[in-house]
Structures are given as C-alpha cells and as structure tokens.
Image 1 (cartoon, rainbow, N blue to C red):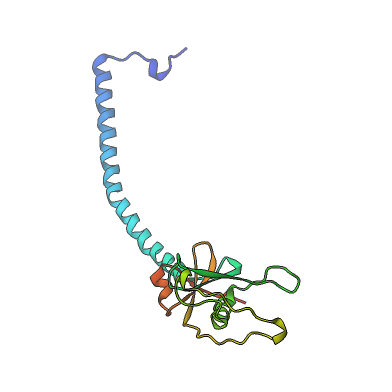
Image 2: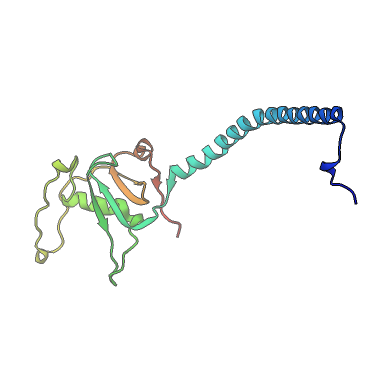
Length: 178
C-alpha cells in the first residue's frame, strides 16, 4: 500500500526548497493580480459611471408616478412645504387613476382658492359653498404649475417653471403610455 502524497517523507533541504518555491509562486501571482486589479477597478468605476450615469439621468429626468390614485398639490416650490392632497374616486367608489391629470386637478384647487401661495400659515380657509348654487366658480389666480414625482412615487405639483423638478432633484412626471 502506498502512502498519501502529503505524508511521503522528504529530505529537509527539499522541503525548504519546496516551501520557498511555493512562497515565490504565491508572491508572483499576487503581484500580477494586484496590477490587474489596479487597472481593473478604476476602469470598472469609470465604465459604471458613464453607463450608469446616463441611465440614472434618463430615469431621473422623467418617470411615471407609481402611486396613481393620489396627487399632492404643493403651495410652494419645496418638497417639505405645505401641500393639499387630491384623491380621485370612480363612480363605483374605487380609487381612480388621477396621476396623469395632476396639473389640472391642482390648478382647479388653486382656481377655487383652496390653495394659495406660501406656507401653511399663509393658507386661508376656503369659503363654504352651497351645492344648490351649482358648481363653484374659479376666481383665483393659478400660478404656473409643474408636475414631478416625489420620493414615494406620488405625483407632486409645484408652483414654478419647467426646470423646477430638476432643481428639486425630482424626476418630471411622465404620463403612462396609452
């Protein structure tokens, strides 16, 4: 019967030589690996930055709302500012998809005076409306409004110009395709 390879007796000078050879081989492979990693890591980072940056920019530039039944109408150009929420309901009583109508819903609230410019302290209580008198008449000025998608996926409508979403670090609201 033969002994396993690692249990064959070996002369001490050969054992030392084998150990030195093994250490030299590991050191050489390690140095070669470090050189490859030295160039591979920065290259991978640059590649990810270029391709990922384009993808992130495209994603952040515009996207649809993921919460489709609610719209937030802000009274100032600040995500942490005062807002009023608008929710849609179908005739059957189910939540309605209102995200694509975000700007028109908020414009209606501004026109009715339910929202006014500024923080919560600047808001005035809307006047009571008698339903027998018919629909309320819009009398208040409506500022320029822009729809973005806030962090939780709800359409947020802010008073401001077309570049406001970008300045707030939010993607613009993109309507769902048909």
